[in-house]
Image (cartoon, rainbow, N blue to C red; front, side, top):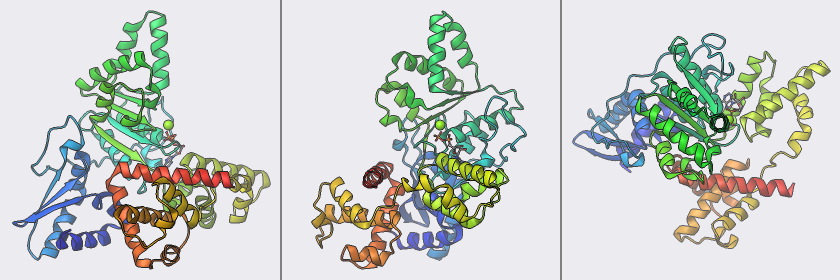
Length: 454
Ligand code: ADP
Ligand code: MG
């Protein structure tokens, strides 16, 4: 990597802080620095525009400072990464920054949508920052650029919340005149079946094709439903050609939805795809605190931390735990202390994802990559084994509370090797969604193993 870029990004990390840095700067790919022009590649168009908007100056200034002369920053993206978009090699003109605030809770809300699911009540962290930014961009300029927006992620991670927030916002900015239709894919199918049965397909078509924004929740449900897919395909095309916004959510990427027709898959992939990952500890704490504040629940920071440390599956579960604690506290007329939280969650947490230890991680990783545990822990340096070892080190750091030196010891290495491995894998995860999926898969396997052992 170019030294100027390396130093400039170190500088940017300090300026922006770790979360923004990891989300927006780390995934950038430095291409070259020639004739005072630094060419930097972003993973996709949305990313490119967002970075151009927000971080262009920071990039320019840090690069110029490190190079000792004024540097022009040229941001590009690989158009091949997103089908159906024109290739862009020229510097991308930054889009105007979305600046209008989200509608205030209780104020401009779509009457048919849950009032809690607004941007204001969504806590942003590294795991969902990209999807949140994408959703806001779409809410501010519906039908304009990222159409469709496809949000995917595991259960209870905020897909429906974000998609609904878009609906509220579009409705509010249109002063209630915009037709926003939010619908679970399953309901779409049921309505279709009823319309066919009652011979009212004309009405059905009319209803969907008249909307300004259509949000279809959980589209993975369309898998294998050929007739519904066919109808949705036409609805999609008709809305899209009129530049009406389409928002889709799913627990899988379009590629992973088996039983989805190729032509629909292509449509789903033709706009912007944004994922939501499980929240990290800091974000979980922030979510609990936000929910407690919204409920006027006095919750000491220590108790919030306790909950966040012990409940990590998804946000819905976090909410459930908080509700349970609040209910028990009100029955007992007791203040919520950490001890109280521990007592209230006792049964839930005992069965709840015990932390794997280093040996278990080593074993599962070795199994996953089909290498011998002995080799994983050996000094062997063949590329594949070294890579598996790095993955194992990364997961040990992420999932156990062990220090770098302690992890190093269990691999017969020193702590700097572990730090290096950790950074390498973290970077690759940020850059490569297929790789991130493999890592997720290993983590899920670990969870299952733990759950079965407990
Ligand atoms: P999904 O559709 O991905 O299964 P939901 O959108 O229904 O998940 O979210 C589950 C619950 O968690 C909802 O009550 C939602 O408000 C809450 N939630 C999820 N992510 C966040 C977040 N980042 N900040 C605040 N609340 C969240
Ligand atoms: Mg949902």
